[in-house]
Image (cartoon, rainbow, N blue to C red; front, side):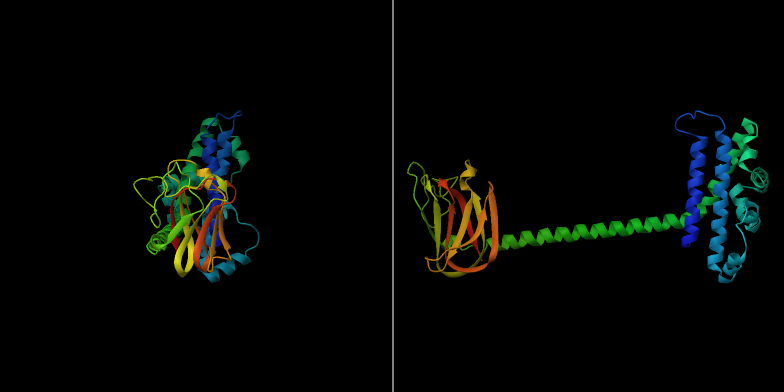
Length: 313
C-alpha cells in the first residue's frame, strides 16, 4: 500500500493529468490559443509528481534509502527523478524504447516557455504523447488507492447491510411482541358499561365488542359532556398498554382528546394516557399499573363510539 506521502503525491499527479486532458479536449471551445502548450506543462508536472511518488514509496519501504533521500539538499528536478527511476518502468509507460526516447526529448530540460514556442502541430503531438505517457505511469501507482477505496466502500456496504438488518430485526421483534401482547388481552372477559346510550344507534351486549347489528362500533353514547366507557376486569391486574380502534366508517374526530384512566378501588382514578390527534387506531404504553377498572372518556362535549378496545398486561 502507498505511504501517506506517496498517496498525496499520486493525488497531485492525477489532478495535473486530469487538467491536461481537459485542456486538450475542453467541453467548450477555449477563447484563446495555446492550450496545447499548457497541456504539455500540466502533463510534465503530472509525470514529475508520479516519479517523486515512486521515489517516496521506494524510500518508505527501505529505511536506509529514506535517510539518504532526506539528507539530499534541495528539491529534485524532473531530470534527476527520471534518472533514478528504473528504465524498465519508464519503457513500459512509454510502450517501447523508441517511444521513451521521444518522450524524454519532449519533456526533459524544457519549460512552459519552450512548449509555447513550438509550432501548433508540434505542441499538439507533444501534449498527446506526454499525456499518454503520464496516464500509463500514474495508472499502476493509483491501483493501491483504488483498492483502498474499494475496500472502504465494501466496509461501508457491509456496515449499511448490518444496520438495515438490525433495524429490520428491531421492527420485526417489536411487531412480534405487539402481536403476542394482543393474545393476552383482558378485554374479552371484562364487562363494560357506557356512560349513556344514543337510542337510534345499535349497541353490542357486554362483554362483546363485535356483533352483527353493529359492524362499525360496539357502543355509542349520547351527545354529552365527557362521554365515557368503563371496563371492569373483575380483579386487580397488571396493566401496561391500551389499544383503541376508532369507529370504522366516519366521525373519527369525535374520539379526541381521548383520556385513559385506571383505578383499583373505583374511587381514585389515575390518568395513564391522553391521545389528542385523530386516529384510526392507536396504542398507548405506560408504566405498569395495578388496576381493576379502566375508563376511556372524551374530555369535551360530544358523542363517543369505538370499534374495539384492548387492555394489555
